[in-house]
Length: 208
Ligand code: SF4
Image (cartoon, rainbow, N blue to C red; front, side, top):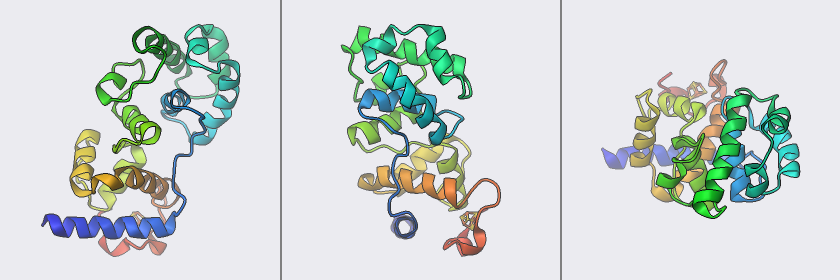
């Protein structure tokens, strides 16, 4: 049974790699701190919009100490075009203060510490671990959830259960790549509305 599941998931990943050979992180950042801020800002908006905002944000506050001392209204003014901008402003200033006071200005490289930071949940921590520190992790967002359900890799709607199902079925060294492939597939092909089912290599085994 487990062998069959592995065969299935490896086939899916091979097909997705053919479809999206350059699948990777679409947020712009130049260090792990900027990655963390960008991921916190990315909730309920697009990476494209985040990249527009962070271009200005990181120019004005170019390290953790500057953002920790940022004026709330000035910071809010930069990110106000994003949804949830008040909460996000509070969170990125507070998490910068926490990094300075508790971690010597460094982003911690373990899950338990990451999720203690303001605005950092399980998904954000997993993205930072995988993308920023190359530590195997699977971050489950709306695209990964939908794709996992439709491809029959998880029948749960609960993001933690979906993450655990994917961790069980996918070889650890492929977790990070699989995360990007599922996001690209969900974002550009197997969309929530009007997925491209007629062209889909998985159409005969889809659980939609
Ligand atoms: S057949 Fe359609 S819904 Fe199913 S995985 Fe493919 S694109 Fe998604």
